[in-house]
Image (tube, rainbow over all chains, first blue to last red; front, side):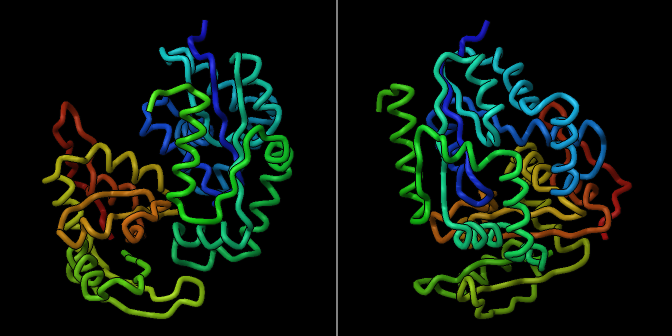
Length: 187
Length: 142
């Protein structure tokens, strides 16, 4: 039996700034589950090196073997240790995953964080390694993989949409406002 | 090891340089104009001594376990990448921060490449047991 009654699910393309949602939630004391961590744990468990290729491969393998909602299901299994009513989930990629959360939790809302590719690519280069691996072409291909899984549909169908093309402080305060409202926190 | 930071128009270049030197002495710094980011300071250092200051400072500040988690998360293809708060670094305090963090002029990006990156992580931030770091003496730090 889950104590969790409400979940906000953050999604967005790489570099959109969606993980700031997780940072703000942690600051407010709301438990955060990062879906990418499930894949990272699996890669660690298999004792293979961590890099975008292996992470992508393992993610696809898990989906093929256990279905498109496998990562959501693994997160749901760990939700039983949450004692409060609210959680934030970072990094959903498809409607199947959101559907799985909706079956387990009463109130689920999807927040999409969006920014134009040019802005996202600059952010990704700023935090990436200083080599030639992050060209526009390579990042475009990475975007395409995300879209193939169904991320585009999820963003288009989101309950709340935030455009993050300005200052990060703006995004933080917008997210803080949304979290406070949805989880009925007292300020 | 490579350091990288955007130098903002309002910022004193020498202070950013000082922050680089504090993080990783001795270091060779280079200033350049980047078409995408504007003024950028980069720094390069090689050899096991380049990570010695990190290892010492993280130990002194007793934040090994937090650092270790962060470094392991960024591990990719024989290298790690993490952000350091630049104002803290200038004051010779070592604080990790998110690479997405733009507040306070944004982070200094630190990249470490090594033949055996796991050993480098174990050196900078050894696993701890009951709060005591577990050192290994067979580390390869090239």
